[in-house]
Image (tube, rainbow, N blue to C red):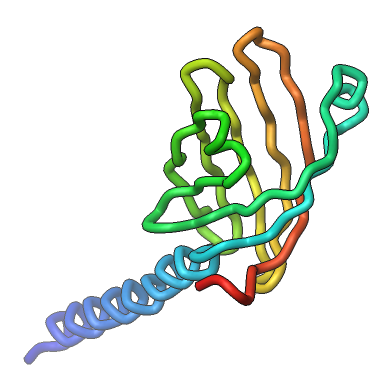
Length: 140
């Protein structure tokens, strides 16, 4: 094997190793969110003035989707969950034919989850909330 061929083989090997090392980060990110998280959700001041209240909810991450117990009752469908490149952040959008759209953006430390939820209601008004919670140890 000549010098140039050896360099190509070595470079191919390094590229392969890098690809393998990067793959677990993506898989880990999906697994970090999987399961049920109990969260408290607080409206911002503008949403409070329009009648929004603090509430508790369960965020359920399953098979690449996000569903929340409270908003499922309002007819919101599970939203596709996109995990960011760090593997520790996500976005998801849930829709209802009559209640509008929810956009969830959040992060996790592995045990805790926090972020922002924006509800664009059917009348086009926008309510913003922050949420914080932790993994539900009793639910897998």
